[in-house]
Structures are given as structure tokens and as C-alpha cells.
Length: 243
Image 1 (cartoon, rainbow, N blue to C red):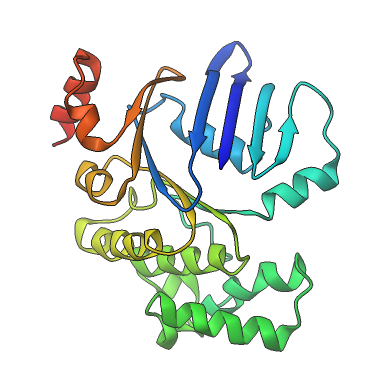
Image 2 (cartoon, helix red, strand yellow):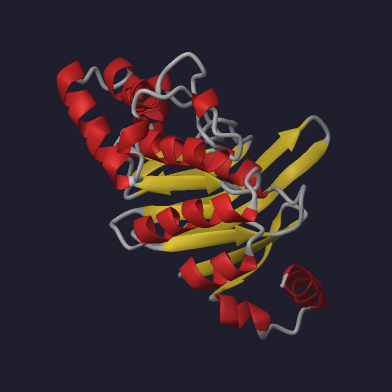
């Protein structure tokens, strides 16, 4: 289980995350929704330690990070190796091919043998349906193809937790469908998945639990159907606006 206790994050005077308490069950898919600026992406970035929380605790299957005290760098690095992050803007290395993008972290971070890393990267290209694009550079790929390569790159580190930060927001509807279908398939595998999205039909179809974040706080959580039945005008307004 991924457990978050009393997590706080400030940017200057802006209190972005306010005493976040959240339990994410292992090998389940949790979808995080809420309006822009509510703190959804910051929450993912704190879990991945791209942002350092100002206080609170994040623990995963017994490994605990307490941000009220100094945490050794090695402990943070060990934790981040368990997570894989997929960004809305792809963030591929422009000077590396699709194959090289996927191989990069296993070779440089995990010190994996290049031949083994290449073999596993080709298997991941097959998984995301892009074997024929192995020698293509990012500028030669569509947005949807780039995002699928980015997902393969995250999978190459063999993470236990997959984090998707609005993975289709930069895509048109046709390309969006390919990426969402890939995430649907991953949700059937043994990953713990957190997805920030504005696509409510996807949230309904893929989620085991939906978390509604509002102004840095968790306003509600439960199944999608449970959220639609809540007597809360803010949530009703949000869901009706997006559907």
C-alpha cells in the first residue's frame, strides 16, 4: 500500500497541498481529478520526489519517508526507483532514438548491460506497438507515439508504482485513444497506478478509486459512481461540466 499522511507543500506563501491523507491500494488504479491548480500534479510530483514535501510522510510497503526530518539521499533515490513517471509533455531526449530513450535509464541508473537493456527495450517497444519506430527520433514521431515511447521508458525501470500526469492533455482525440487504451491494458497488470486526468469517461472506465482534489485538499474519494451520488455541489458541478 502507498500511504500518504499529513503531506504539505508550499511554493512561497502558496499552500498547495494541505495535510493530504491518502491510502492507495497496491495493484489498483487510482484516478485523481479536480480543477486546474487544485494540486493534483504537485501531489504526483511529491510522490515521485520531483518536488520535496515540506512536511508529512510517504510510505510504500513499509519503506517510510518522513519529511519532518532530513532524509538521506540514498533513501530518496531508492524510493524513486520504485516509481515511474509519465508527463504530459513527453520529455523524451530529442537527440536519442526511441530505442535509446528507453535504454538510457536502465543503463545509466541501474548499470544494466547494454545488450540486455536493448533486448528489454525492444520487448517494451513491442508492448506499446512501436517496434518499427525503434530508430526514429522524437521529432519524427506523432504526439501519441512519443507518449507511448515515454510510457515504455517508464516501464523500463521496472517500477512498482506508475504515475501519469495528464498523459493525453497534449494530444488530439484520435491519438488520445491509443494512449488511454495502453494505460487500460497496464491497469490489468500488477502495477499500482495513479493517473491525473480530465477525461471523465476514462476515469469511470479504468479506476478502482477516484480522488477529488480541491484547493489542495481531498474533498472526496470512492468509486466513480459513489462520487456521482454525493450530495456535494462542487463535485456535482465538476462532473457535470466535464461530461
